[in-house]
Amino acid sequence: MTLFAEDSTDALDSRELFSMSPNLQGKTLDEILFDDLVILAEELSIRKQEEMYVKRMAKSSFLIPGTGQLKTGQTGLGIAQLSMHLAIVGGTALGTYNLLPQELKNSLDNAGETKAYFETLDYAELLPASGVFWGGLFVNWLLAHWSAEGAAQAARANIEEGSVQFSPDLRLIDGMPFVGASFHY
View 1 (tube, rainbow, N blue to C red):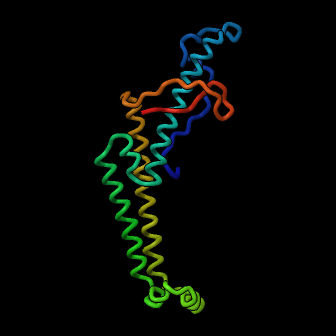
View 2: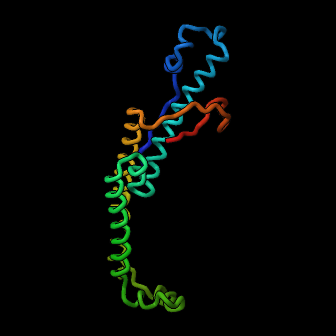
């Protein structure tokens, strides 16, 4: 199970690598020219940028549900998921605070009183507030996971439709010569 939606791309085998560039098909290593490698590097750069775009949209929606949808053009769904996120977080905070024991709520302004309260605390008093807190956290995690999956699917659809365009970027990044990683949309 993944924490958030992302594609895991394995290393390319030689057939797939050569199929990306028609100039390389049927050539031996001795026949491959530098220009052929530049074309291949451009194709790899675009593929890497597409992968990064999908991951970025998924991570964005995992951290703040709905933001990936807003960035991929699904405005209504993004606003709905962001609203659900805010409602869950707000409801969790409000419910947790309201279920705290009254003595603890009264002592929150004074550090000495708060320390004294926790020294004599019966942990059973905090169970209702803890249950609401952890339940809200779990529900928010489910929303974040669902939102990240949807944002990744929307990003892949944008790539397939051509509404997001990438251009080759030949730079030395992360120790990989000729494979740049940037995108514009």
